Image 1 (cartoon, rainbow, N blue to C red):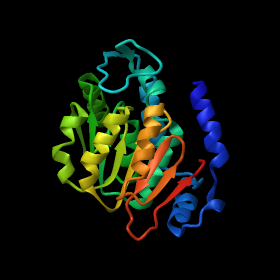
Image 2: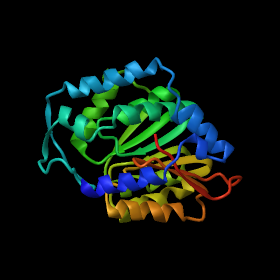
Image 3: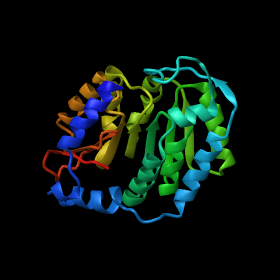
Image 4: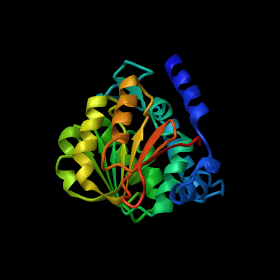
Length: 257
């Protein structure tokens, strides 16, 4: 926790808001999407979905295929606690909604479904988008599939299994957005990135979760930023956002949200 606090202080000191952004593309994204404070009807749906999870006292056996939980070592967990400790925060869920709505992403891939909070938010951003989401734990996958059904969510395919194996055949597809979450280890993160690079178009966006979760994750993020196919990157502290726009000069932004 101490290292995370120090990392955040350093982030804050080097970060900026829209006034420090010279790129028209990034300036528009920051002002019209990141900092959009207008109330959205979908926000009540995001709140209702998460509220249902936070009230659920059902227990399930969890199989951790990634770096594991930082809050508990037990494999028997309560749904409400998973949603509280490992689920997407309200702030990030709203940001997911705004991002998908802003870009109108049509094909989305998510690595790390968990309780489906982020998936649900992305769906609300564009209900017509085709979302493929992968969960490593069979019990969590089964529970979340049922949650999607209960909330009448369409156009979502939930796959279960080891990310490394499941994403291999998916790399031949083209995705507008890929969200990397669920395995916070350097080698795995870089492997997923390289495997899914062929699925990126000029307008694709890759989002990496918790880039300061550990020294390894920060190193992975730094490696990704330097990749020759990557142009614009944005560090929001909790997310690392990657663009492949060939018309943009290679540039890195550190934006506080």
